[in-house]
Image (cartoon, rainbow, N blue to C red):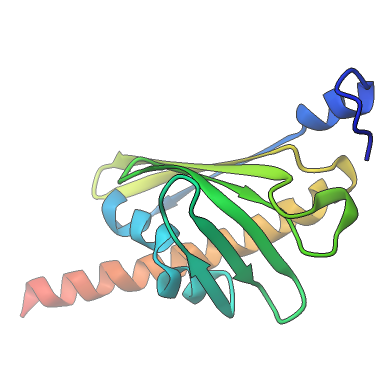
Length: 157
């Protein structure tokens, strides 16, 4: 990876953005909890998670026993936004903290509109990350739906 800040490759890399939106049938505060609580994160994206949700706090996700994500929280603004750095142990072009993920939550009726923006992902890894985020955001929506179902059942009894 070029280290010269004036390099066209670095400028190009810094402009690579992946964006995805999904509607979740749970309120923003419930969805936010799934983005910052280690046990909740584990339910939708990893097998082992360390999360210290404060600016500068650690975020480590063992996704599958071989892909270890390491980063840190940059912004934690409950229940509206969470921003964290993202990268992989042992991956030269996308090491720990090499890219940034921003997730914004907006109330949408009785649910939440989630917008994920992943910046600075190397261009040759963008398709894999797009597939990965699509998969994991579906899982997040499924886990969130279970929260909504539990809330509905509790209110009905």
